[in-house]
Image 1: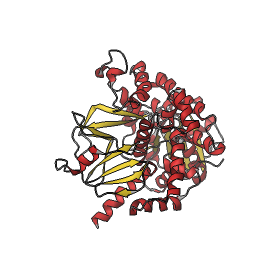
Image 2: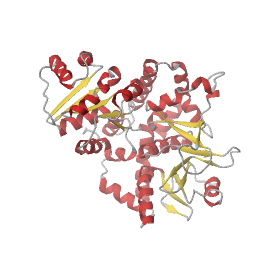
Image 3: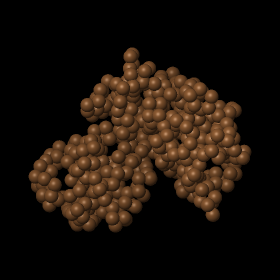
Image 4: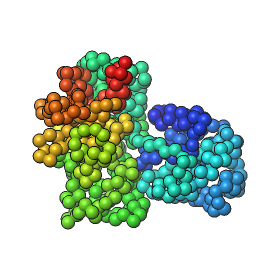
Length: 450
């Protein structure tokens, strides 16, 4: 099968074309395709491409032993491998698995000052001490975050191109319903995305064979690899507590309010004992954190309770893989999403919003009389987003939009198994269009500003 097309491909080219570009660190969870994207970029965009993996090629960890002068680093590299071609201004050096050799990232300052060679670093977020890197290379590097495939990339893998996606977006932009045939086709592909997820190796196998055979085993291996990485890289944090939180995510998502409660993770667990644990999982790219707003008003940052949150898996397929065997069979063979429908759709929405660039917030007032799954924003409005697994009433959404006390809220969005529409208060979009929300809100603001 052909290599999966990734959005990172264009992002890397834009980085190279910027005459002032800095050395790059590509962040992201393990097995999301970072190495493949960087390797493809290096092999197609440079005359010389040098890839060093500090786990598989341990001998290269010593190239920084004599300091960070670029000439010395390059000399040490060529002593280890004399066939390395170093062409000034036409060479990309890729330091992979830098968690095994932090010196590789520390050297970025020297490479930037030298200016003759482009350098990209990547590795497992679990093992990277970004505090140490930052202290040594602040101002001399650029960070970019990569995720598993989003739904648009999943559509690309299915063979859909820009022209077809533009047609779908124009329906969204003009608020014209999609033909029922399109609704069914894209809804079915979205259900595939929920189950298979966006981990590249898994998505590629699914596309190649056209069924879920062997997919679950691959997903469960990734979940197991994450657990092994936690025990390997957790550092000073209590590894058992991180594992407790990680393993409890499906349990809380299965509840009606989906709120994550440390007190129920383990017997006698207290918030103060788990300080930094949730953030560690988030920094590792494993989970997406969604914080409860203190008040449904702007600005979002600084207006939330850091102790009141929901946790979502960073890939929809990994949530599915964490469920009971009975649920697995229902999802994969019977396509019965009713048992765990709310959690699956909400987790997928959180994942797609994150990949679109939205920070995650929700709102639940102290009496739980007003609850909203997500709160995003456009240029000057707070926008409540409701996820409806079933087609039902939306009292909280209506209240937030119509009540005068919520001055920053002017309209809302409802995501469900419904066609495109607008009732004067909130927009209705099918789940599979969530990846286009950022573009929709931006262009809506631009039209309004004209």
